[in-house]
Every structure is written in C-alpha cells, then in structure tokens.
Length: 173
Ligand code: 5GP
Image 1 (spheres, rainbow, N blue to C red):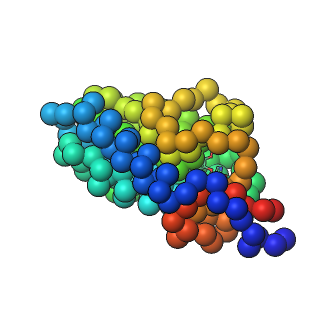
Image 2: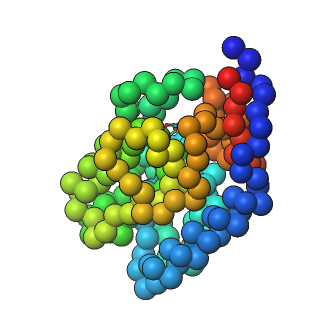
Image 3: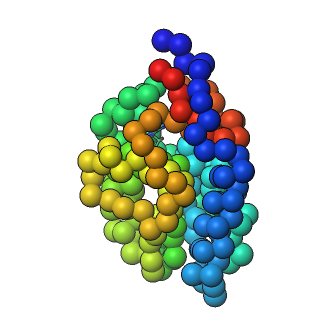
C-alpha cells in the first residue's frame, strides 16, 4: 500500500488561529479555576501542547494512552492505560483529544474519569468526524468538523508516520 501521497486539508495557519480561539474561550470560561488538561497520547500531543500554551488560566497537564487504530482501520476495541495520572476527584478536567471518530475512545475515557468524581469534565477535540459515530458522545469544544477522510499530521499518524507535519492532510490510500 502506498501511503506517501497526501493533500492538505487544514493549513498550519488555520490550525494556529483555531487553537488560539479555543485557548481564549477556555481562558475566559475557566477564569479563577485551575484546569487539569488531560492529553490522549500519542495523537493529541501537539494539539494539547499548543492549546495549553494558549490557555491563560493555571493549567496542569496529565496524560493517558489510548489506542484503537491499526494503520487506517479502527480495531473496534479501545486499549487505554492510565499510568501517572494526577488525582481527578474535585478537579476541573478537560480531555484534549486529536480526533473523534467512532467515539468509543472518548466514551470509555469519559466513563472512567466521571467515576473519579471530577468537579467538572469537558472534552476538547481538534477534529470531529460525526458521520462515523458509534458511541453517544459529543465534544464540548471542537476545532474543525471534517468529512470521513483518514487524516494525518499535527500529531496524527499512519503507522507512526506523519505526526510531525505542521498541517492536517488527507492521506491518499
Ligand atoms: P474513536 O475511538 O473515536 O473511533 O477513535 C479515536 C482515535 O482513533 C483517535 O484518537 C485517533 O488516534 C484514531 N483516529 C480516528 N480517525 C483517525 C484519522 O482519520 N486519522 C488518524 N491518524 N487517526 C484517527
């Protein structure tokens, strides 16, 4: 399978502008509160890093590892490891996710976090593919809604490639 051809879907400038807007929105909505921003590894690492830097409210970082894709196919099961997470109880948590596809990952993550009794929990996803949804889940903050394409770049991979592209691209499979 040739996996080298891609076309830019969302430019670096568009991403930068939108992430700043999300940061400003979160800064005003969380004014006076301390955020625990939970980054889902590995796909959201670049998004969460940029988002954290555009949030003015105090912001602690946490990480979870979630894996549901092999190549460009969802496996249908979600493998999550929760090591080294700070205490969730009573905290204002925001889950930073790269992309919502079937929604199964976020469903599992949000159930896990809600059971830990946070003061509040919101989901902030850079990308949303609503046409592929299987689980009943919606993000509170969304960067961009996209069609059903397999996308790479800005943290998103195809077999660990393309994460370092500064834009979001549609992979020609
Ligand atoms: P879900 O559980 O919502 O089906 O899948 C979420 C995860 O699947 C994302 O965090 C991401 O890792 C992966 N994923 C879903 N769609 C895409 C895509 O178009 N490109 C890439 N690279 N990963 C995707």
